[in-house]
Amino acid sequence: MRRLLLALALSTASPAAAATLLVGNKAENTVSFIDLATGKERARLPTGPMPHEIAVSPDGRTAAVVAYGAKQIDLYDVASAKHLRAIDLGTNLRPHGIAWLRSGRIVATTEGSSTLSLVDPTTGRVDSIATGAKGSHMVIVSRDERRAYVSNLGSRNVSAIDLAKRTKIADLSAGAEPEGIALTPDGRELWVANRADDTVMLFEAATLKPIATIRVGDMPIRLAISPDGRTAATSNFLAGTLTLIDVKARKVLREATVSGTREAQQVTIMFANDGKRLYVAETGQAQIAEVELASGKRLRTLAAGKGADGLGYSDR
Image (cartoon, rainbow, N blue to C red; front, side):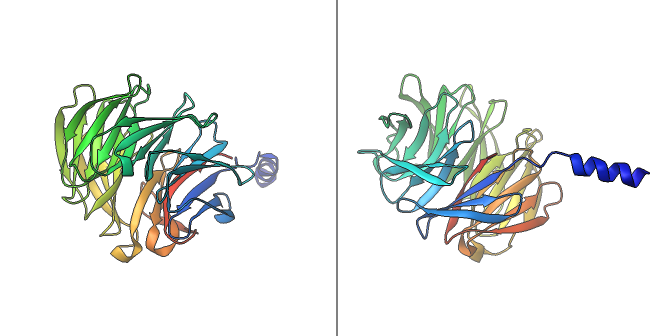
């Protein structure tokens, strides 16, 4: 009887919600749409030159993909996997880091012009804020959308930007080649990964004062913090590992091996919405590793295109 009831319950359960992982394939100028239920690529579309980072609209309907080798952002409908249009960034060159705000705007670092670009995806209007720095590469935005933080690879600092006033507030001194950047979910701490000295620096977001430095794995090229704010992870390019950090204690928990080799060219990492898994781009192998956070175990490998790097998630 119990088996019968269980079978009936399973047969009437609603199907899992659709979910799509988007991957920017920078070595072939395409974006992959991967169905996370099956692990299979359902579409691959052309992009502008050298697609890198990806941002998905708050409603999950639209994906924005930067063309780092040009001056454009491509927009795609996620559900139908169709290209909608390209936004020309004008004098703002080499877009890289990107975020899509709840207010509807897109912000993107435009490294080639040392600016942070503010884009209206509806009208295509582009405004810019000067960082005055070299290699303005990655960006993170506060939950209230008042402030953006830009990591400047060549200037060894992070620019704090007032988005309302469209001015730079200050430059925070960081380590060698700061790149990966994240805010804790409560907005209190800014974390910055310095890829050339294998450290993560922590700053108090309100005062912009440094509060701690943590040594991590070999070349931490990206940094992400779990949705619950408990765990931070660095993507260690030369080691092919993840350094997992207890955010509250500010201590390394362990180093989890993904590929364990520099040949994998491990770059972008992204937490799943439930925080239980990480998606890890193995750029040199044209694939994404899905890793269980609790165990560090590789659950599956998702095939993408050449140079698979930037990641985005949509529930569509």
